[in-house]
Image 1 (cartoon, rainbow, N blue to C red):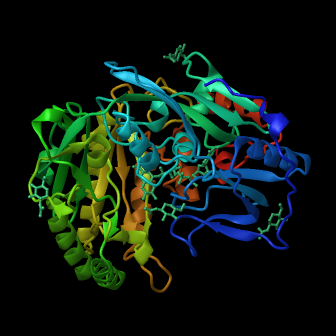
Image 2: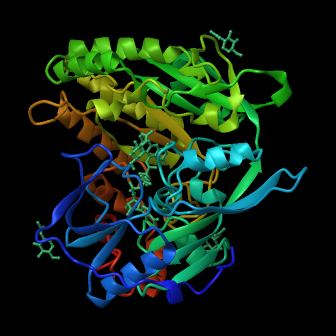
Length: 513
Ligand SMILES: Cc1cc2nc3c(=O)[nH]c(=O)nc-3n(C[C@H](O)[C@H](O)[C@H](O)COP(=O)(O)OP(=O)(O)OC[C@H]3O[C@@H](n4cnc5c(N)ncnc54)[C@H](O)[C@@H]3O)c2cc1C
Ligand SMILES: *[C@@H]1O[C@H](CO)[C@@H](O)[C@H](O)[C@H]1NC(C)=O
Ligand SMILES: *[C@@H]1O[C@H](CO)[C@@H](O)[C@H](O)[C@H]1NC(C)=O
Ligand SMILES: *[C@@H]1O[C@H](CO)[C@@H](O)[C@H](O)[C@H]1NC(C)=O
Ligand SMILES: *[C@@H]1O[C@H](CO)[C@@H](O)[C@H](O)[C@H]1NC(C)=O
């Protein structure tokens, strides 16, 4: 990925004109869902030289800066609380230097930071390639996912987005472009691999790609006991990607798994519906779940309905947009693993169906112990005659990760906690409906905090970096390896000595003390 020219020669002069008062910058959920509280301006550069120029002007005036991708995060942890300039990467959407020689299984491609999974998937599919399993959802940027350690779910294959990166270019705190190459012996790479945006703005990523494949998706329904007492590792590890969805009120799990098939074996082109709903479904769900703020029976009914819907394939045939009724479903890699929106529907958040979430990673060797502990917390409520449920349309998401070594990733190993992370991780991702009414708190709100506090206190678990509240991240710091934090901070000081890229997450981790 050689740079074609010296960027700074082309950098236009950018004047930073602050708003008269700070504004709130929201997540994808819009007003009421702040990502940053104190934003002086939102800039949308359309080239890397422009990014450099913005950063240099900001550095000269002592301003803070944070990159922004597609806003797909949940909480108010993106910036620090002091005045910050937001630099959106949407205008950085080039895809370059595609290289997958005929007959080769693997190749490479370079993307600008603002490229989304959907954009790259389309580009690659036209050229007979895919990014494999290092994926997240469709409208999320590569810059945002690599920065925050985002991942899919697999034990057998690498599925953390950063694991598919071979090199990246970062605009540091002086406005210089630094190129960092994959090298497990180099702390700069190990820090850049999950940088939390604290080293600077990632502007380009070189990615590993693969020959495109067709895959199948299959799903089974399991009794809860079968999973809690079962060989969880054995349910996940054999497949290219697999996960569980837990229905705690129904005491059931869905077990979803995917793997490669011969492309000639099937004409089907299944396309997964990731988050789309019809307006009618959305209004029904919202009405039911809002009443569930007070009435547990509404939540019980909701889980019953969601479970029934989620038992069927959430796929359509892409060529003619007709529903697919039977498992397994077959189709092209990206369409089946992720898919997107159906053409006649909108994403749930466009209908004010918003959520809270919590996501923690545990060593997969503790999978049964962790899930049983959560079960015991549900049961403790039942003893008080309080029925708790999943209020999310696909239940509680249980994901997995292959061990991946870096400093701040959820799946790293060889850490001072002495836990065995080498077999991989299990992630407990507990989304829940955020009532649109009153104080927006959930039915039996304290239960959710009890679950988080108990797991963090009793297990060596690590937080996902965009799916947890400030409180959860603060409490989780005790579970992180102090030596990893120290090594990360040494690199950070070299990239950003004045801390212009600081965020609430970086502050909680103690990097600016
Ligand atoms: C509906 C939905 C589904 C999701 N699915 C998954 C999933 O399957 N797996 C998973 O792990 N996560 C998932 N996430 C979380 C998501 O992957 C992360 O929050 C990701 O960071 C969002 O990227 P973004 O492009 O939307 O960036 P933003 O939300 O805009 O930014 C996220 C953070 O990254 C920083 N950042 C963004 N771009 C850059 C850059 N170029 N350089 C440096 N820092 C940058 C920002 O400053 C911010 O701190 C999901 C989120 C949503 C809302
Ligand atoms: C993707 O995100 C952009 C905002 O960054 C939004 O305008 C667009 O509608 C989204 N696309 C889908 C399919 O949700
Ligand atoms: C915004 O940050 C500035 C410092 O950068 C601070 O003085 C001000 O109080 C902050 N405003 C809000 C609303 O937090
Ligand atoms: C849609 O396409 C699939 C796969 O080619 C085919 O089996 C099905 O009959 C088609 N349905 C309609 C309504 O055209
Ligand atoms: C594991 O940690 C030890 C001690 O910190 C170190 O010597 C060793 O190189 C590490 N191994 C890996 C794979 O990082």
